[in-house]
Image 1 (spheres, rainbow, N blue to C red):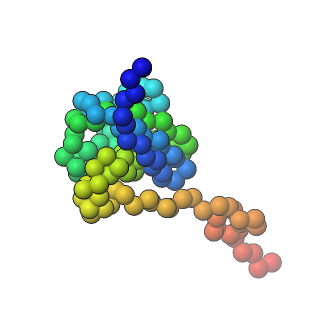
Image 2 (cartoon, helix red, strand yellow):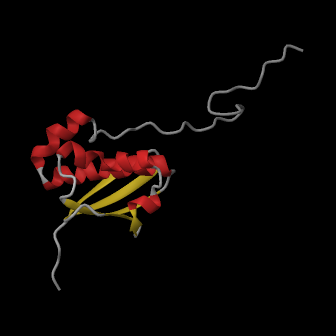
Image 3 (tube, rainbow, N blue to C red):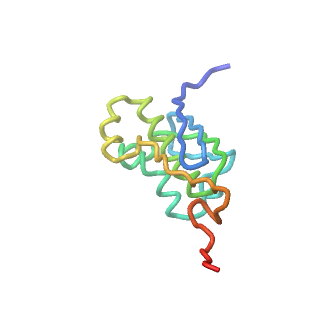
Length: 131
């Protein structure tokens, strides 16, 4: 059995975690066993996922097998983008400055703030009543 070489990285955003494997190929993206268009139906999210390939000018050079879990579709798309960018840097270290300049390697750490007791949401307090 021949073992195919791939480049692996993990991308994260909000609660979403994407495990990305890049294989040399023709640009096919498989997410959770389905084509990208089926998992992320919005064109803007598909473009978000493709961004690292556009920045690196490697649009049809790699196939990707991606497992993503957690979060919503926007968080998942951004986690996939983060994972692809990191995997491309593993594949070719010379892409690091280009990816860094485009802001694709930075983990966006913004997550939803937890609700606190005595409050309605994370910071919204009940209306004050004097009497």
